Length: 295
Image 1 (spheres, rainbow, N blue to C red):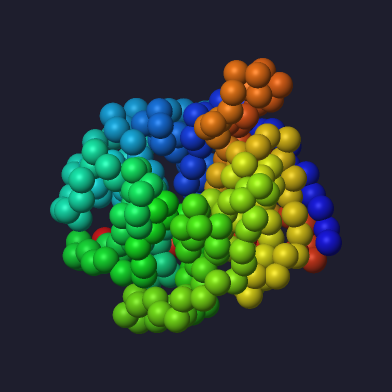
Image 2 (tube, one colour):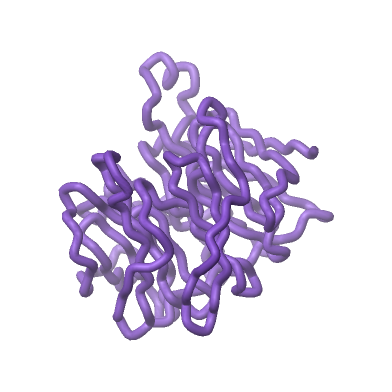
């Protein structure tokens, strides 16, 4: 099994870096620091990282086909007109924001925005996975979770993945792109708690799944059926999400966090919370351009 190593490209020291996405048109990396309420914009060519204060937790986002972003905040759905622009609340699911917030999400190939919540008491499956249609209607679908993560859609639109991180399982669903309906949930990979748990993920152009293993210091490359194909090692314990970027979509960017690290651990690994990158060369497949919200 091949092993690769990711190297630091931005010493961001985020508390909980998440939801990293590549803007293929502008050649920029967008990402969030959930607990610090910030949306970031990183330019790999210049090394400059700009910050937008959202004023509340931002768990996930997708770029909008008309510009700006659709986002899942603690308070619910919102539209961000542009980086640094206005934040416009939208109609949102009825949940208690003192106990739940949006966590992981992305668009399917048709431009629906899928996003799931995190149930912060962690005493039951209180998180819900929602689908936001282009016309603004939303519905609960997939399955309930404690912490929604690892949401991806295969390039052919036929498979959706999802995890509930505390359950240490990665699931796949059959996905009906025409109706936006997942079905036939199945476990494609299980994890032992001491080795970390699945967090954010992305797919390559062949449908292989790259999963960040939080508290596991690695990203795993899995086949569509869950077979371990390669490991990308990181020098910090908490990788949280990854995305393909670069002109040729062969640079994997990995965001990380500092959560649950002691002062001694942070002193030993001060670059925790940074953004890391690694080139994914042939014969590995390149990444895909992320779909944008159609609304």
